[in-house]
Image (cartoon, rainbow, N blue to C red; front, side, top):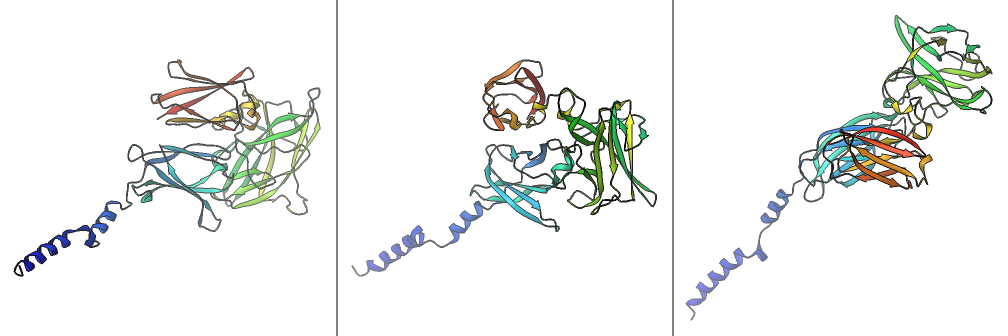
Amino acid sequence: MAKKIPLLLLCCAVYLASSPVFATNEPVMQSHKADECNAPAPADFHITSIGGNFIALVWIPVWVGANHTLDILENDGAGGWITIETINNVPGSSYTVEDLESGKEYRFILATNCSNGEPSELKSVIDGITLIIDLAIIGRNPNNPVAVDCSSIPLNQNWVGFKVEYVSSGISIVNLFELVVVEANSPSNNFFSKVEIRRVYRVHPIVAIDQDEFWPNCDNPLIPNVGTPFRMARLFGNGPNKELIGWLNLVQNSSSSISICPDYNHPILPWKNAYKFTALVSSKANNMPGCGNRSDNITAVYADLKAQSPFDQTLHVFFPPSFSGNNNTNIRLLNAQGQMVLDQKLEIITTEVALPVRILTPGIYILQVESEGEVHSLKVIKV
């Protein structure tokens, strides 16, 4: 019997050595290696549309059903970036970032989530996006404008506005600005209480700025009250840095004349002599590209209507606040052949409506929004 004990002990030792109860850490380390977070970054990460307070992003996932982590960063004004929000488990191939501030510079970082739920170390980046620069409200370009007295600008012209020019050491920087009436005091007279100041050249350093030192964009144009001065500024780069040029006084003299003149004697910010101001009028003007949703032939109720494009499985439609509570809004979607593929009647409760369009094939579609007997159309693209 004693002779069998060594053999028994040997068998037990072999068994215990192969048992997982007494296993070393090597299998655990191998498991972690399988879950290392190095999934490829999403491809073709880019912006599809920008509004006054939102940016729509789109990308190509690295695999079907992938989730993503999106970091939103804001320029701290000192050359650095601050993470203001991290959105985990973003599905699909698109996302709309909302509640952004005009004038702030943003960075977006997107990563594929690995099997352990953590974002990959490999990331896609969109850098240096400033809402206001990309959506500056556009005025018309005057043909052969004529200089007039700034204190008596005739209103019976097709185009009324001014130019601000900086000339130094052979360098000339000029931008034009159109004045457009947006609110009359009453329907029975030709006096008005508010105007828009629209810059003709969008990507340009000379701008008109509001009381918060922002410059016009599609959703929030500079709308001065008549009789209230407004300022001009020169931008430097895509960030918030700018030089204040001076104040312009805006006064309506009569039903046929308006005054827009620099304030050279302003007690705090007198108009800088390095910038030449000229009031202009023209009998003809050409439309400029950009901000098509503020065209004069579009009713004001549709001015801030937008839709995400391109879109994937969901089409997001963004409504202005004036639509709130409207229970008689029809949304239709037509394909490239003019066939109706979606027809829906909605009560607008929030400013955004998400329409499921998973079954639609990729291509170009026409979105129609009808409210109070008027129809507005937008071209959108499904990917």
